[in-house]
Length: 334
Length: 195
Image (cartoon, rainbow over all chains, first blue to last red; front, side, top):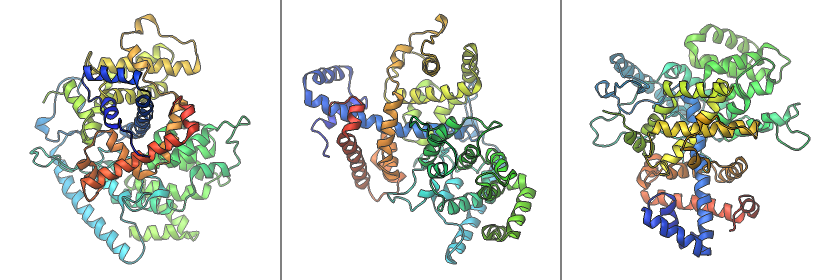
């Protein structure tokens, strides 16, 4: 559908580029010209729709900020503002320089590791999913949907907001920041990559939920909260999922916990994902029990420094039961 | 360097997502603001979880009003945000109790201008459906476009070969969206459009 002859005028109005006088004149034309008014209604709607995308990303970012605040663009210590009441999410300290070097070596090691794995036809896919974790976490982005992890720029590629490159010529160019917390570890990278790899075989969550024995649709035809959350998950609206499901509480349905656990994992909140997966694993009669053992293993792996023993025990149990993926994971670790 | 409202506004409007995130976080993560919002919600019997929901809604409107130029600088940004938060709280409470009203001392002059900015839930869901039809690649392009990224920045972000191809892609995605909105008569009717 071609754009209207009024496109530029309307765009200038909608993007706030007109002066007060021009704005008034445009609004007057709107009341007089029906064709313009129709084109305006459609173009305004386009902007509203685009705004929905921006809102979704902001909500996802806010959910992630709880654990990973965005990094300050003023990376130099001396440039950081000190006024009372101002928030400096992260401060550069000298020891971070050394972390930097370690991070560089780690990235080099992982790149070589991934290339070697790819050259042998298996292992961890080297794609944006993995690299997203190694880049500046100030751009906190949700993990892409596991069933849409494809090549970059393809129509099916996941929507991931990537960090901006440093501004050329800027003396205070932001240096790449060392990865934070557990995300800095190769274990986390391996867990995320393995999750993405396995996730390609997962059905959409809304299908999983419908496949359960839960009453997901009310007699009135209204969607249940769980189904709404599952659909939000499938469209990567992780903040919405958590809003719909609420905080974990005793008596939550298993499907709810399973969905919440995956959402936490996608948001890199592994510590929150663990108790949810553990709940599923605790009773073998719960739905998703077996899958939860695997994802619990990946959650332990993502927080390996804290949960090494739990990881080792569960991995050994799974391997002893003939779980090939667990065996492969243990081999990679070795 | 002083962190002024002007600086924060320029960062929120900026095509640099690092600056934008950081600037928005100055409000989202400000303990003083959050203490105030929590206290406000508590006065009306709300809990922390209610405060988080409402604060996120308020942040979305706050961000949009700054980018769209609707915030004219008539007040401090924090004051503006507090007005939006109060109104968001009214909307939140009215979903549960249609007759809910703020106490007199909590009503201020910022509220009328903000109220009209609310997207109705149903309308938003319809638009979300339209966006979902576009696919991830177009969503990504339109996200950056809406945040006023230049074609050069979109080209760099999405690793496109030239500014021309970024422009072409943006154009085709908008066209796709426009066509969907225009062709879907049910959608147009639901959105009260005379297209």
